[in-house]
Figure (spheres, rainbow, N blue to C red):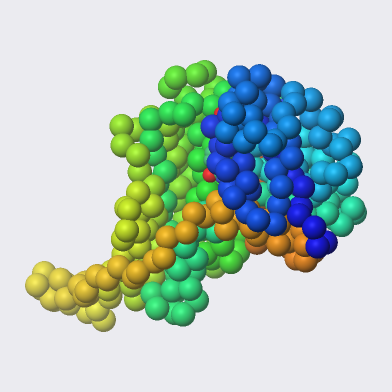
Length: 349
Ligand SMILES: NC(=O)c1ccc[n+]([C@@H]2O[C@H](COP(=O)([O-])OP(=O)(O)OC[C@H]3O[C@@H](n4cnc5c(N)ncnc54)[C@H](O)[C@@H]3O)[C@@H](O)[C@H]2O)c1
C-alpha cells in the first residue's frame, strides 16, 4: 500500500483524543472519521481537527470503503461488538485494553482477523515505552541474573469505571509488561479484593501470578489511594530493578543488591554478610511518547502484514488472566488454573 492509511477512531472520551492526536501527527495516515455518541465530544474534536468527519453512527465508518482501519477506544463492554463489526467489514482493527470482556469474545476476534488476514492489535501501550523495552534488554543481557520475582503497584484516586473492576482497568498494563518481560504466561492466578464505593465493582485488588518454574509476580491495583503510584520491582538473582513511571527522568534504577545465603553462620554479625550492598545506577533513557510508537507500529503492521508486538493473541492472554482473577475473587482468593489451550479457566476445588 503506497498511499496514506485511512483510519477512523470510535470513542473520544478521555483516552481516544490521545490516539487521535498521535495518528493525526503521523505522516503516513489520515484520520478521516471520529465517532462518538456524545455530540459535545464530536464538536470538540471537529474544533481541534477541522478536516475530520464526525458521526454518531459506527455503521457510517464500517460502510465507508475508503477506511482501512478502525480504532476502538470506547468503554470495554462495547469493544467486542465494535471490533467484530470492523473486522467483518474487512478493516484492520486496533482495540484498546482490555481487548474484550471474556476470552470467548477475544478468541472470536482473533479467529476473524486470522480468517480475513487483517491486523488485530491491542493497546498495551507500555510495551512501546522506552523504560519497559530497556528493562527487557537488561534482563536478556543477563545483567540482573535470573528473574525471581516481579512486584507491581498501580494506584491512584479514581477514575472509577462502571463496567469493569479496578483489576480489569489497571492491571492489563502490569500483566502485559510482566508477560513481555518474562516471555511466558502464568499457569495459575489468585486474586483478592473489595468493593468499597460501587457494589460489586472491586476498587482495590491484589493479584498473584504463578509461573511454571516457580516464578511469581504480584499486582496491586487501586482506585482508592491518595497517591498516584506506578511502580514495578524486578528482583533478579544478582541485581534488582526499580521502575517508577512517575519519575520524570530516572524511571529505571538498577540496584546492585542481593541476598546471598551463606553456607552457614554462627553469629548475628555473620548473618548480615549474607546481604550484598552495591551501587545504584540509573541508565539514560531517551524519552519518546509510547503511544506514538504504538500508533506507528499499527500502521507498519498493516503495511507489512507483520504480527503486532501486542497482537490479538497477546490481548487474549491478558483477558484469560483477568478472567481467572474474577473467578478467584468470587472464591475469596482461590487458585485458578489457566488453560492455555482452550482459552478457558477451571477452578481448583
Ligand atoms: N492504553 C492506555 O494507556 C489507556 C488509558 C486509558 C484508557 N484506556 C482504554 O481506553 C478505552 C476508553 O477509555 P476512556 O477512559 O477514554 O473512557 P471514556 O468513558 O472517557 O470514553 C469513552 C467514549 O466512548 C463513547 N462511546 C460510548 N458508547 C459509544 C458508542 N456506542 N459509539 C461510539 N462512542 C461511544 C463515550 O461517549 C465516550 O466519549 C477503555 O478501553 C480504556 O481501558 C487505555
